[in-house]
Amino acid sequence: MRNLLSILIVLTLAAGMALAADVTGTWKASVPGREGATMETTFNLKAEGNTLTGTVVTPRGETPITDGKISGNTISFKVKREFGGNEMIMLYEGTVSGDEIKFKTSREGSDRPAREFVAKKS
Image (cartoon, rainbow, N blue to C red; front, top):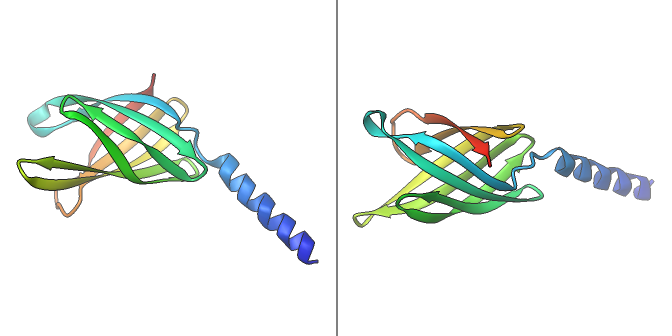
């Protein structure tokens, strides 16, 4: 009985990992900014089980992602940036569908509404 339970647990974990979105690769998006301007952004992502790592590249430079997670077709991560001596953490949450990720991003601690955009696998 104990062996059967162990096998079922392993199979359940393996099935969960198999269902995780395949986001490894390069994704590009035009991210909306202030007053209607957009910023070309590249997401270099790597999935390892339910963990997501990688970088976000903008005209301002390349920044590593932190706290990256994958749950089914949903991904989430944080990006920490510094502007003029002030630290800012951006929160990203996305839903993967084929070669697109529909993102919502917001600034941690801000009451501004989240910005939405779509990244496409390249």
